[in-house]
Image 1 (cartoon, rainbow, N blue to C red):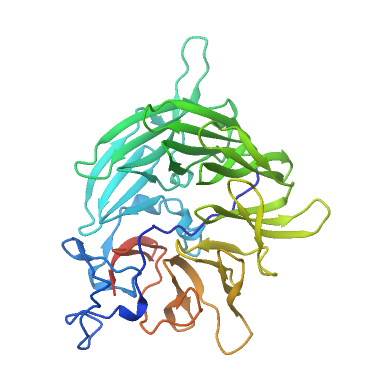
Image 2 (image 1 turned 90 degrees about the horizontal axis):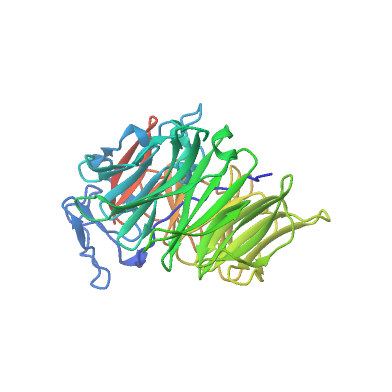
Length: 425
């Protein structure tokens, strides 16, 4: 039976700056006569109106730009929150653009103006109209890859079916399709009442896409140069791609899948872990995954594991087994739930800091995003930012709790609508 995989709070990879060297510009709406920025940490302008701050200290609501309604359609709960947080958004941020996956293809949105500057449709008709079935696109060099689930009509003696279509769009204007390719889906896919597709990652000329249904899954390796299908791995829900390896959960007994690593180039199995009841598998760095759950003997497991070999690297601190963690794309894992927020060294598993409800004079924030040494969220007094290595409050209040962050913008949920806020340093 296909087991759910905890979503990640996604982050985009750019180089970090020293927090101590960041200060508002002279005409900064935060006010004050600020010192000029440190010479070692320039803030280049990518587009008029957007300046890079890595990581951002705050987000400017005055420059708020609403995003298309498709970005949140079918993804909010009764409380108006996005299910799964930032990981539940079908958005990839790339410089001053957002690539938005929709059931029929991909839209390219200018984050300065909010205008849709490109739109590429898949060749067929969407298999599902519910927007919640799509996940974020992935970056592969100078192309953005977006998977879509498309219906194939009945013909002659052949019944109707479905295909996975992968659409590649260039990252530069005019944002046209570079190529399309299709892969026939198993017979169970069209019959599934809950069907999702996710581009897991792309590396070394291979893109990995996972399709998951009610109680089944399949993963594919697609060549980004020839656009041909390289391999198919039935039963595999791929979670991460790194160092020539795809890691994921392989269907086994009900709710007890097996963690595996497969070769990125061929799809052949490289290693297999122990069966884990109700597992969590999360990316924990470029070559590391976290696997947590219950072993067959009833004992708890929560480890950082080497992706290429499957060998344990370190144990996670106790008490985090049911908590979702996100890598900040630097050195730190930040684990959070409704009652705690914890920083863990991603290399050693060492506990760095912990905020727990009812313990001490600080309350844990509701973490919304982590990126490049910074933790963003909402505290008792409003939006907050923390140092990911120490857990200390940053001196500048961010003014918003973004769900996604890049050097240029924070993506914020306002009254059920996503908006882009320019980043400030």
